[in-house]
Length: 349
Ligand SMILES: Nc1nc2c(ncn2[C@@H]2O[C@H](COP(=O)(O)OP(=O)(O)OP(=O)(O)O)[C@@H](O)[C@H]2O)c(=O)[nH]1
Ligand SMILES: [Mg+2]
Image 1 (tube, rainbow, N blue to C red):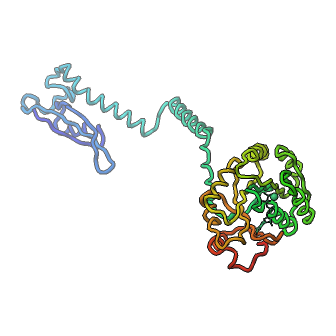
Image 2 (cartoon, protein in one colour):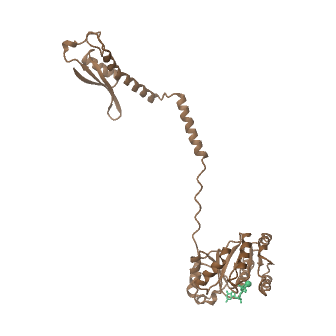
Image 3 (cartoon, rainbow, N blue to C red):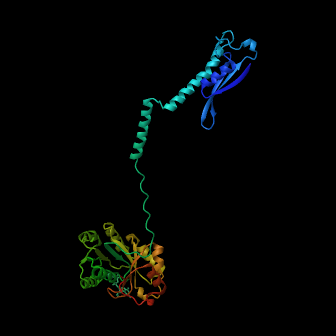
């Protein structure tokens, strides 16, 4: 028995070649689809034929493709010949379906519904929260935007005088509505000092008997552009006063607290003061008496170390002249050389 292979563009063509070449006695052994060229395909049939032409005869006319001479078919012969044809039929059906996309409508509808569900889910899925905005980079000199500013610090550092300077600058130069509050009913003459400043500048002064009244007083002064709050200087060992202020500030969270320190203070002293007033959560440093030092290294060291920027610098006793808005170059200059190198001591624009 010989097995020969025949190819054709279609199954029909391949079969007709088998027939033409081997006659009707040939037995189809297998069929398969093969690649032809880059994208094309063809069909290949392997067919068997008896070697002895006498036994098989060329063609008998009544013998099928998979028949035997004499017309006797064994069942397994038929089955063997049918199997590849059945497989071929299956693959042809699959090809037809793929070509004409004759998928059942229910299948298509199901897929569409699934797609729609996926889209809806995408649309309704909660969007990821935007990344939190990075905090602005730290700058040692930062202007104040606050509408309520409170100065704390050790005794005699220049809190009241500096408040008078800031108030005068805001009211007389910037033409803002300014009010003063003093919590200093402790020191003899404290209120009189502030009253004098308030009258000179022409701004209202409110005296509070107790820090607990602060929030209500600020509420009353809500129409003002800037309210400056003076506190009594106390010994750094007096923790009661700080605790009372802490409670008051808890009820008035928008108050910006400036820790007021003499420019000549050593880093150790600055850190001590920072620790003492920490419950008040100061957000700025305010250096006074810059005029009294030849050098003031803490002007640049402390803001960076404590991460607290400076807004104002007090550079003498004169009200309102001796006040400067801190800038980075000015802080660096004063830190290295003190006030002596400059002749311009007027209020910075
Ligand atoms: N040389 C100099 N003296 C200043 C400066 N600021 C304030 N003073 C003086 O320091 C003294 C005390 O000033 P005050 O403003 O009363 O100080 P304070 O911190 O309010 O004092 P207490 O309320 O008692 O804690 C006064 O004689 C001021 O003139 C400054 O920048 N330079
Ligand atoms: Mg004072």
